[in-house]
Image (cartoon, rainbow, N blue to C red; front, side, top):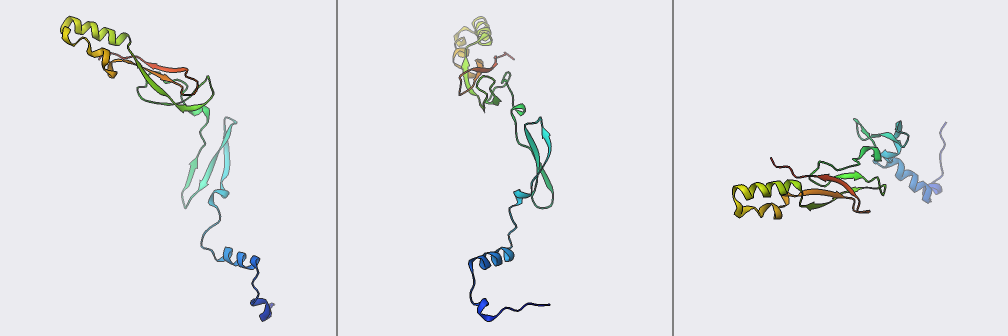
Length: 148
């Protein structure tokens, strides 16, 4: 059974009819992210999610504080850490300091070739690296200079 509409109804498009026809004829799909489904929880904090983009399914997981370093010891460049003092995740601020390794190199240069004994005092490579939290200025890591 088919239902026919009169000609007067075809000539009076309403806003809802236009919106429905645009939605039905649109080649775009509805929001892909709305089809995300949570799966196994991560430490009870947040859930992993599968986001369907095209054919292969991509597994994504939101980062939590357990995924970040809590100390930057041994690193010579900026690190993204979780500061235990201020409870924030951020990049460390680096400063250098004249330390024991630089003193040893200075003493060695005094013995071997004294005119160059001042070099370890000014070279950044010969100094200890100290990592600070940029928000609370707490020391979160230290990397001493080692000769060789």
